[in-house]
Length: 164
Length: 164
DNA sequence: ACATTAGGTTGCGAATCGCTACTTATCTCG
DNA sequence: CGAGATAAGTAGCGATTCGCAACCTAATGT
Image (cartoon, rainbow over all chains, first blue to last red; front, side, top):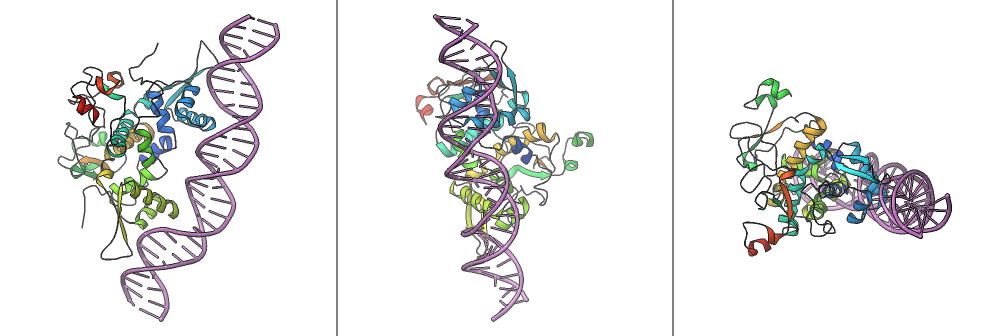
């Protein structure tokens, strides 16, 4: 009957999933590109505007939204109080794997070539690995290796861990 | 001066980046939730509609878009020619790391709790690891370990490899 | 043959997008 | 100090997209 190992009990898709919550914060147009700008050292409104070519009102709206969600922190510069700095918070930095995964997918399946410049390991200047889904002990997993499970059926955890 | 190791030469943000290309395919409202439905075994228009509560015209538009981008394949059922099956292509499956990374981020930073059900390794029923950016030899990397580099400066590759 | 189901399409009001122009606060330079 | 220039927005407004409900068409069940 075509069961593929990834089937989750229906009627629970909409509820109990954090994907809608994540998209609430990051799902709008320009949000990911603004985030990418932040990862690349853009700090100021005018930098984002000229670099991304986004309309000013939309940019203002998105920056405010990202600040509201705690992804960027807004601080006026001390040395020039006209300027405002938008910097990634820890929560914002935590989106790095998502962003890299999306970018790598685009490279592989849309543009067909690695974007320049390339993201490398600072230690040995080698390309980073493709972002993968891994088991707890570091084995790469494909869709055939994955199952949806209820928290109480997860191995290697106490009930307290499962609830946290 | 606050250089964080992730600065990419400016003026190249908009060009030469596959993130806009990826977002062209997946950046619209509902696209990720439809993808998630596909990963969870939803195949038919009415399933997506009732499960996600999305408007019918928007759903039709998004499914067509995902098919156009080769993320879903559309095929009318043989046994009931009213029905249409939307199934993930290889390209669509390749979005799994992105989707898992986004979901995990939402769990950690938005909902604050693991969504039920939980994605586990089928072999040992243990939770999958957090999706991370890794070096070529499997070390986890943080933002401090990363640099942007031109293709010709990437170590461990011939020029031919760099160009491909 | 008649009703039902699956997968859409159409119409239309509401919200969002994007462009341009304007505003306000701050800094620089003479 | 006063005259620009600059940074970060805001306001107006037409164009696009969203979302709800109703309708349509082909295939199926009874």
